[in-house]
Every structure is written in structure tokens, then in C-alpha cells.
Image (cartoon, rainbow, N blue to C red):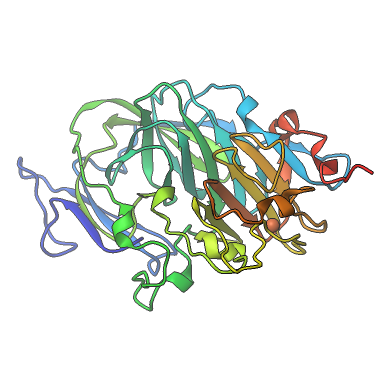
Length: 387
Ligand SMILES: [Fe+2]
């Protein structure tokens, strides 16, 4: 959605005859959100996307809920998660509500199918690994630090080119994941005051235009159930497309931090907004420079949001015993803040090299059985001062 984009061959006028070299018509597909009033793209297929050979349900996908013994803070050591599965089936959802699922994937297997999440927009944060995301809109090479923004309905496959892949996975139900409205003007262009601009987005630039016949599977997640759809042609058969709706990449290191003399609030770090949640990036930056500044964050009572932080590296000075790939969850109703000694220790620090992805949700998050296995039960009492 960053801006209008076109790739490959398209006819000069939409909805007109556009013929293949053998004289047959290309199949034009309108790929759009919110009926016919949201963002959309027009895609031109070599084969009819409606030409299905077979289908079957693979069953419901619903993480098992875990209800902890009490409402409390959590620290999930996701570095301990068992590697396995492929980049879609290997996702382990840790927290969820009706708006969002948040999980981690450390896949070791390749995808011998394509995937279409018809339920949710996806935001994948690549912590480790690189490779290609193959989509019907073209190929998006990805690397460490990338946010991959995937509009719901995009057919894609993730093909890692290195052994180790680790990603934070976010699924947004009921709406799009977008740059915050306050960063954009009435036409959608990013403002001068935005911490990033259109040049920082990497759009699909290569369109392979597959014409192979054979047996291909597209797994479609819809209404919480996974369907296997069979086709006798390669689903990446698009010869051209244009519009406003397509996947793109944005690297967290292209987020230009905004700094203050005194402590800036978390919305300073906002990167994306979704339905009933925000995503923020805490990136290496200069710290507060008032003569009496206190760079550590203040104690904070989030009365009506749950705050999840994913520590991309472990150098987070406000909190002890946090390691790479730790997740902390500070839910509504109880205060959180720097741990004992962290505020004093932050005085005089001029910069930080922390790298953290934060998701704040406006409705409570439920936890899953996978989260229970990674829970550090000592964390809620880690602020207690020894006397
Ligand atoms: Fe907070």
C-alpha cells in the first residue's frame, strides 16, 4: 500500500482484451480489500485462477489456550523454542486475541506448497536468516531485520537460502497493517516528519512468470480452518499487475529514530498500525540529552493495553535476565518499568544499541500452551528490592 506500483506487462486500458502469444485471453483478476472501495491491484494470469482441480479441508488451526494461575507479568524465553516445521506450519503462536496472533517460527523444513492467509494480514519480522519470499506479485528478497508486510489473500511461499531462520510472526484479523495515519498526508504520501519514507520500502521488482503445468497446492487459511486447494498449473503465473495492494519489505535499520532532550514516549517509535494494535521499533539511537535527563524509561501503568516486547538483541539496559529472542509481556492493570538500579545506571549514557520490536494491543491477549513452556516464572518478582 505504500504507493502505486506496476510490474510486468499490462494492457494500456483496464478491463480490455489482453491476449497471450497464442491468441487466448489473459485472465484479469481484481485483488481488492473492503469490497470495491479499499486498496486493490489488477493481476493478469496466464491460467484461470478459478480453475481448481480439487480441494479438501486439513482441519482447524487454533492454538491451545493456557490460563495462568494469576494475572501477572511474563517473560518468555523464545530462544529455547524447538526448531522445526516450515515457515508457515512451523509457527508457534504464543499470544492471541480476536485482533491479533503473535508467534515465533524457527523453521527447518521447506514449503512444498504455496500459502494464502485469507483471514489475516501478516507482518513477519526476520530476526535471523535470508532468502526469497515468492509471491504472485513477484519476488521479494529478505534479510535480517526486515519487516515483511503481506496483505491478506496474497499467495506466497518463503524460501530461505540459509540454514538458520528465526522470525516473529504477527497475524492481524479484521483490517490492514499500515504505516500510521499520522505519518501520511491526505494522499497517503509519507510526511517529512515521518521516521521513514517511500524509498525505504522494498517492493517486488522481479516477476518470474511461471508457465509450468503439474500438480500444485495452495493452502488457504480461512475462517480458522486450513484448506488444501489443488491446481494443474503453477500459481505464480502472473505476467503483470498494477495497483496499490501488494507485499513489501521494510528493514528495521531504515527506521530513523526521533530523539528528545527528555524521555520520548513509545509512540515516538511507532512503525505500523493495525486493527486494535500498534507496532513500534526501538532501534540504536542517541539517548536523552537534557542536563538532568534520566534515559531509562519511567515506570508505566498501561491501564488499557497489553505490551509485548521482542528483544532482537539482548542489550536492553532497563531489564535484567533478558536475552536475545526473549519476549516480555506487561499486561494491563499492573505497573512495569526499569528494574532495581537500572534508572541510576542509565544516567550519563549517551546512546543505546538496543533493538526491540514492540506490539501494544488494545484488547487483552490470551496466552497459549506454547507460551507456558517458555514462561520464566521468576520474572514477575524480578523488580523486588532486597532489604
Ligand atoms: Fe510500557
